[in-house]
Image 1 (cartoon, rainbow, N blue to C red):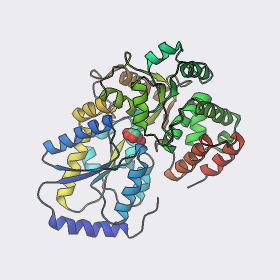
Image 2: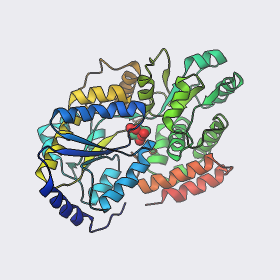
Image 3: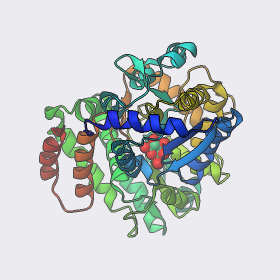
Image 4: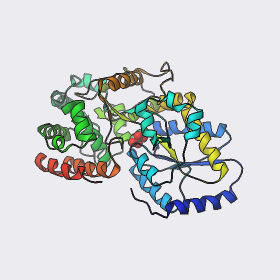
Length: 417
Ligand code: GAL
């Protein structure tokens, strides 16, 4: 990401000008992309908490799952010298924004709140730029789930698959019984979400780490990657004809309503099941995606604050950071969102079995070396490489591109900086 060099100066000047006109109550303008049913219910909790602190919330929601649209809008606001108070930014992108010199330093708030002792290192590391906190984590999402409608499986006489090799037999049965096997939304980030899960389930955690985190040329150009692409292509025949462009939450609805058997999606999908009043273990099942038992691809949502020079804005940012880190917020937000708290000390008592499993797998996988950053959700590599790889994955899924060609393109894309 390259912003105009003048950006910092423009921001400082416009912030001063804004400061001269700011009213007493701190207004926080917060950019996010949480617009689906479950997401909107979650973000409203943050708004309520800020209002209880006497701050006013200016919602800056940019719809579009995965946040691509939101990031485009954010860049233009920052380049224009008018950044929001806070924005949902995550993973290595935090470093890229940090390098632009536009992020507020949250060190003193973090030190006062003892964030270092409350967050697992895998989380706190992502939140820091050059050793200082510049971001606040709201949650930990797990990506490698398969969401199952058990009634649909029962009606079709199909067994829930635990490996990719078992998948076609189950999916054929679902289709023969008149169901859509896989509820999918054909948007590049959703294709990429399935792809990384397939790579993990095909090659295992070490392979995932080498190929999709380290972008190791040998792993990218390997028989295992070829097998991964073949498994990915196998899934193509199990999506319905209307899948192109569909939003992820509409795909989740297809599972909720018993039209489809499974969806491969991170546990923000659980937010939709919860919002629809559905119970895990009864109305739906959350199971490890085939071949990924106990492995964990993580996706941590977080907010950064942009430098502002008015004291009111700084107060609002401190309130927001403290609200996000509070145990009350971490509990209620994540109950709605489908994720688990980023803080280690929040009780899991009110959480359902899927969240408890996520929590247990998070801890176990971090010890066993299979806790991995999601490339599809901006956790693993810089945005430029992730975007280029995503393009290859989507083109492959939507064309007759050969596996050999896909692997060649993948190697070239991985070199994008
Ligand atoms: C992810 C984000 C999740 C969820 C999802 C769909 O990138 O981390 O919180 O919102 O996109 O929009």
